[in-house]
Length: 120
Image (tube, rainbow, N blue to C red; front, side, top):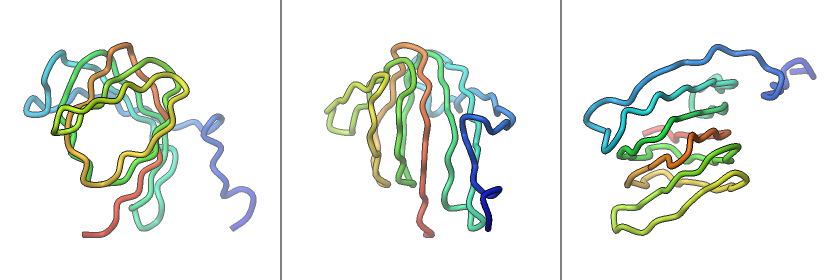
């Protein structure tokens, strides 16, 4: 490996994958979402990139641990017991593998994600 193997997310050009969530996950809205995955490890367990979503709410069930840094917008994350956290521009947090609940985008949201999924 050399200096050319370093991935500069701010200058790396990668294609955006645009999608809508599956109906069984949706709670409200039909938010358009996009992801730009800038790096995946050779073992395909570690990934990082940029994610965006319009307003809406959906069910989440994390099999991976994910570090998030909100770049724009705001969201409310709710666990299965009804406890909530509001995340806004500048929020930095980790969602551990095994977390289940909901994610609601209040204002169009953009985040950097770094995720790791352990083998089963």
